[in-house]
Picture (cartoon, rainbow, N blue to C red):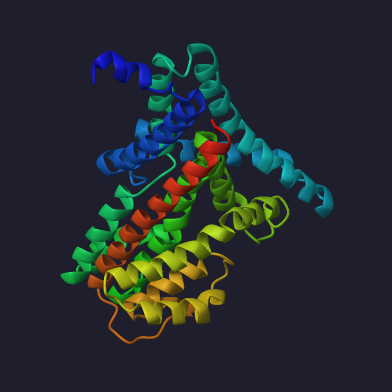
Length: 350
């Protein structure tokens, strides 16, 4: 058969199929490269707050902006202050997500998605998405803490337990290990899985919007007198958007424990039994799951105890928790790919 006859028999490419396939592939590549970029470069350390890279990080900018405008949303009347709290949350989300949407939309619309615009869109999108994800910095801290605990250098280990939001002054090695593992389980949702899923569902703008929601919760989502009204909306919004991801994460952590030949059965038992013991409606699920998988007891003194002390809580357990976290991230990424295929077939989020 001649080349000409083959050419006559070939069917024309379906434009809809080509467009959808391109959208799907671009989104998957963006997600993979954003995670890879974080694994290579990491995030600027908060231990050096004067460095320009730290000052310009979106999460830092969101926090500073929230702190600056919060006083303008105060009111003596609790009902009015709660309403103003809604406006505060929506303002912060809008200020950071709307510009991202319009910049990417302008590139796609006026530069063109099938020309150099595709590369500009993908490049900017990867950079922005990477800044909503934090894996390497936490990994470095966790490994450093485990190493310090192994040689009983508690002063060094305490340097890496502060991101658990507790006073590490009087903590022993087991308590530092607990603090680091609890933080890793909580941060798995906030700084890794939820941004990834937000991108899969709603594009780069969705990831930035989630980062704003999560930052708002960290800035004003407290039940103290100063924030009980202005922060109620932000706290509850963060709870809502993380409701499904936290529960899915606990299930995937149990699967990860099984893959790693850890105690998956105990992970399920402790997750189901202890997830309600933490102040957070959501984060108790992954924290309890990892406690069960590691067969240890995690404790925040005066607040909660998760799991049973079946094995000693040593620095090595931090490394085991990292392994569970990493396998969970891989499983979640595969889930995100499935979501990307579905969403990009139906619509193209920016």
